[in-house]
Image (cartoon, rainbow, N blue to C red):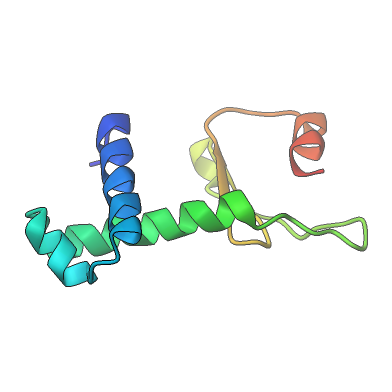
Length: 102
């Protein structure tokens, strides 16, 4: 089951709140009545989000390596060199992809 946008926003906000609190993870998630596995799952998602938002894609040679997956399902999933992942649920043009990654 996928998280709703509201749940995702709330959990990522809680992780930000923990980071700013200076508390130990265990103390924070216990105080918030969050199961440890749920906290660690959302912490990992938060870290990935921060990496993708901060770390630029560098293409010094003019090319970047992309890996596409899930082609048989009609979805295209791009894994960028900086660890970010982009999922397209419908066909996109090559020009759109060029603009997106340049």
